[in-house]
Image 1 (spheres, rainbow, N blue to C red):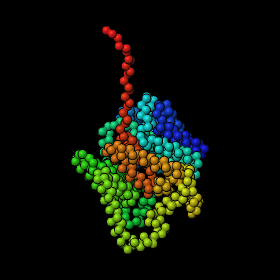
Image 2 (tube, rainbow, N blue to C red; image 1 turned 120 degrees about the horizontal axis):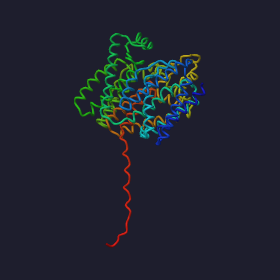
Image 3 (cartoon, rainbow, N blue to C red; image 1 turned 135 degrees about the vertical axis):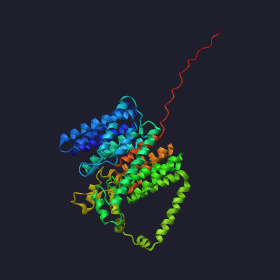
Image 4 (cartoon, rainbow, N blue to C red; image 1 turned 60 degrees about the horizontal axis):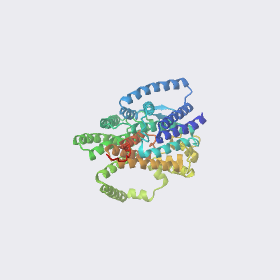
Length: 486
């Protein structure tokens, strides 16, 4: 079945590229059809031995998705709200993977709704605006890399579980009609979810009891501080969600016009901040720091950057003045950096070596762990290669898809942030700054393209760009007549 997965990946991703770039109804429907066909081929290659259970689950998902599509037809903004509600819900499937099964059903409903709209002539080509070309090329390149990946199973899971459904999600969100009530409802849902999750975190911190994750339970037993994960698997994922939820409130406080809304947003920020604090997620604090700098620049322009630079110089000088810190800087070693970064330094360094060894094509989507195990001899023979998981998204992209994939990813980010600057709406600023925060978080956690929130934000950035006005047809030509004498 490996050959079927190698064939299905390019079919699905090239279909997505056709969907993103085509301007005719026939080609867009064909692109969506090829994406579904390729996804089915990958699913068949990954299907468990119990085919009756797989077929039964598929028909049940189709029935629920058809019902959701009818609901999205009547209430379009129900789509992003249901997608947001499903983001924390993960189900163990396909081995050790925690998959977003409820979200996939919602996306399937969005795909059915998209097909219905295309059949009835609602084209809206290139919904993702400036990001359409780089995203289409990047997704196509990722799909093609399944043909030479060193780990077909892992690559097939990534294409099927992340790239195919989340691309459809971004397109569906970008096609939403502009409704002020829908935007406010989505913000209210995001803030309410953050408050609830922070409340769960407070309960865990008070009772010293976390859910599900044995690794966090073990580390809390020996660490000097207690980390919470709320309803998420990992404290860093919990912290990242809170950071994303805080950014729209910060934008409203700085640029909003209503004092009442600003007061409510400030109260929510205080509670969410304390929820973030007990996660002890350094990557989340770095992401929030960048978002705050972006908002400060939005309000005070270049003066904000000067203040940030001055603060960095002063704090860096104070830190370097400490004898212990100065001694550590003077006598730092690779092992010391690796220990201080919880093993991330070694992972990133070896990931860069893998990228240098495969500069053009990379090792293929999902092939990072396998390539890492081959390079580091001490991992040979181990069945569990979680210790080889990359913690840096750009390094992973460079290692798996080469310089081509890294360049396309950079183009995608530049295009998306260009839309944010060009649009200058609060929705655009909130989505763009949140996307930047997830990018910073992915420098330490490697979960950018695997995070549905990032794709939801990509869709919202494009959604906030005003649609180009329809061309005005030229006035009918007036036939010239020869003057005659009366």
